[in-house]
Image 1 (tube, rainbow, N blue to C red):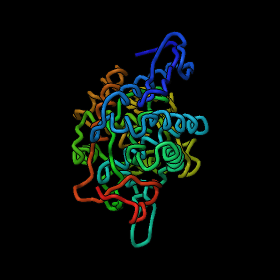
Image 2: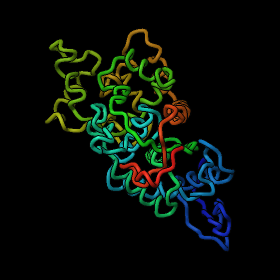
Image 3: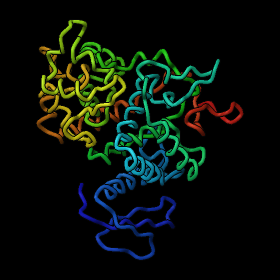
Image 4: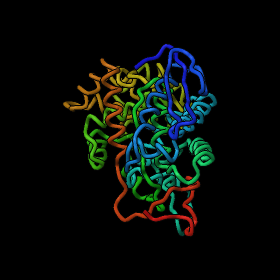
Length: 361
């Protein structure tokens, strides 16, 4: 669905603040000229707001926080203006949340001695960023809809909007998650590492009920964002302690990376061609042996792997990639916490609510 331009009509008299798209201005409503991106956001929001409340459903906040998509959109758009890595930071937080105890917002919890051993202390979460953006989204949401929207849902919808604002697809996010009152630092070992082999990747994704197609599609999120050099520097000269560079790394690209990595903490774009755009370039890079991490290149360069054909198909057809990415994101976003874990809607995403204020679900 594509709109050259349209008017957004918000009928505030409706309990759902009915959203109407029109080619001409209407009377008796708040009017704004909509860009194609906003028009698409409005279409999705209209779908989200049009039906009744249900558990883990796109319509979960239809009555309790109908403006949620726009609140998140505004904050993410501002964040992207200040930091072109904001989108990649937010989708990484959602991914790292869901792979440990399901999508429960536990990745956001900070240390509380004797109470919370933060997942942020786990090695796979070293250097993870974007918490400040989540705090800003939560503040905006709490101001409009206090005590209603979970931090886990904020991660899910902010990942969706981040992808869309970066040129990727848009989809309707099922919502209704709750926030865990515990963290699971040891569970961060479930997260794939930058030097993971294909077998390791498949095992970790398989443990979450995700198959090879999900693995390749979700890895496509590395089409934007950056990685620290320490996560791939061994590929440049001493791959797997052989004293030689990784043979699946293009030599010209390898020398480019050597020049860029002035320190181990230097951050390098995952995609050297369109580093801030969500597109299919990631897969073209893999075919050209320009995957930044070993775990990226494994998808294409592992002999006789079923993932090779999937990489080729996504490199050839961006629409096919986008379609599968949406399916896999929804599938990952549906990962549930183990039964029996106390949950709530956190008022501060970094900390559990005071005992007197939370409602165990």
